[in-house]
Image (cartoon, rainbow, N blue to C red):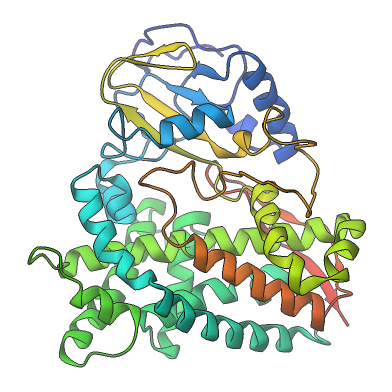
Length: 421
């Protein structure tokens, strides 16, 4: 790949394999994986130009970390690899990333302070309360699918449960949930042509959706301070560490983060798994032979094989090494979870969908360390409950060909036609 005149001078040659262009990311997951496999074989840490269509500013490139072992090592070493300068591989305006990522773009001690404040909402008691509501929501969603005929599975099923769960946890009123769901989806999928029909700039439209989410949470937070309830928002506004409580602005940022992180990971895993089960009937038969005892193990393979979150980034604080490769202070390190989850040195038959896989040390929720997904238990509960309902109540869905979501961060399906008897 040639270097354009407008790009700052790279300190070293770029790798010959392209993972930065729009053309690369327009390929299928399997086609991209063939490139990542070659990068894993070629040392696992390689230098590439900034991703196309970003806002590179002064960025000259990034290090692609593609091996499972190296991704885990970087993830667990926050002393050397910082999140405070941003976690997006695609270069973004810093202000937007701070508004949408909250404590994901913090290092200790700030990160740990906010994580402790939020983690109080994920105690066993709260998870138990959330699970009961997830089960009720999943039953209602799947009941509505039975006999529906031709539908878009993404719209009618995958999208529904994650944002119902977030709305239940936060306390979003039923009449406001559709607007909140649409706002959260825009942050991942981007605005549609219809969204921009008024002539509004795409970035301005995204920022408006961020504000929709922030204002919804701030309004509820103020109400919970006056009238507490048994919900996540009450826990958040009452949580205190050393006299420190979350401000309205911080609660707004938290809402944006949980609406996106708590939405698209589960949503896309649901769509990807529905498609993959249809394409692997022998795996579906294995699962249904003893669904109650096998579903939890299967969920880990849903996430590994789907790899809905494909990457995150860190910035090296000091000169260091990854797998024998020298990384200079200030350089971006891209952690490609989609590649690590296919690492042949860790997973037998890595490209196959094997629901009985055990152990399954996937990195679908991150590579460990202080940024490991706080809501992973809720996500796995949603997937377990929803697929238990789907496979019990509508086991014979006919799944058509997907329309893929073009994205550099999320591996997902935009539309999935299914026929439900």
